[in-house]
Image 1 (tube, rainbow, N blue to C red):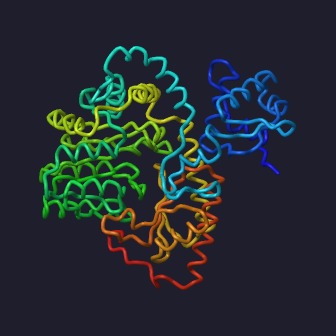
Image 2 (spheres, rainbow, N blue to C red):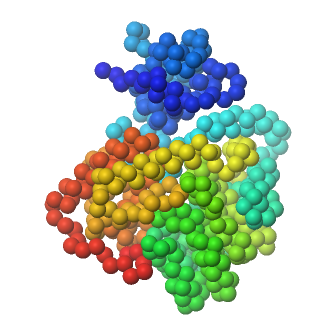
Image 3 (tube, one colour):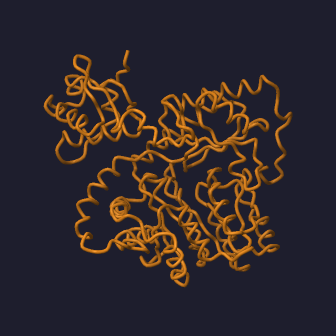
Length: 478
């Protein structure tokens, strides 16, 4: 028997409809909910009569909305059975959005990607972008530094945070990872040195190694950054770069205090080490707290990277570099050796979104609820795991009672959960007593994932301990 989603649940998910034709707004809302998985594929939608009563809308409005779903490929009707959700191109097409190697089926839950689904504002932003596109079609369409309207929106965001920024200090890129690659390509010297946090975002290490840089780790412990230890490392090796994630650090969720930023900025300037500062999570403060000033407010030589992948949607592929003016020519030249710019439509949509604010309040509300649910689930089903509840960001960094994260990832895969173990985040391959758990999936998926992970962990425990004791932690994570 086909699963049915209730009219009451649809009403809760849809929320308030945007201005404009009601049937079109309802159809757009349902398309978004189906596309990001909050309304599952293949379920039967409420009857037109039931949804009409639940939403307080006319039957005609519901009929037209369902017709729009069918016309766009997001639903199909079966005579006598009802209307069922679908995606354009067929059922398997939906799994393009799931980053699972080998092609996962519908029962897989992917916790390898700490990125959220798109909020409703993204669809409206694309519609606005398309309406603005004709003004650009009479030109060649290449903007290597970025579309001026988007540069202005990004610069305004920094100014609002107390860091005056001119639009021409912004170089738009296809995401923060590309931004990091451009900076390293422009400024690295062969056989140079780079300071990198441990744990850290794994793709950063690959970029630095590809530039033939020797990596030096700055371990984070339960209290975050050891500024004195970093200062000693910088003094000894005088690295060319220090790659930092000071805002809801990936994967630990730690936030560098203003005092620490000031101290570290002074250390780096003294040794002429260029800070590359990844701020992709800075707007994701989930408890309404004020964030410290940007790192560049304490170190004018810092190069700052930003992105909309975590705050809005990874499919936008919009990132940027905020750089000191003397570096801009080198950065643009390096960027043009890779590509000639981000698509104009995406930049117009991004500018529209940023003018509304750094992140949607509804997105923050949803992420907060998912974070709280994940904290409760891990506490209930895995009570011997330890973590510090983050005040923002997108993930929990969990310490296991003993080493075994890599084995757990394999066991979880046998239960159709994709899990990333600690060694992936270690530049040197350690941290096998840690796992990262993003809260970017709906609560129902998080619940199922944690239950499967807990069962896999119990099976590992019953098969014999992988390590008899918890690794020692003398001011650093191993």
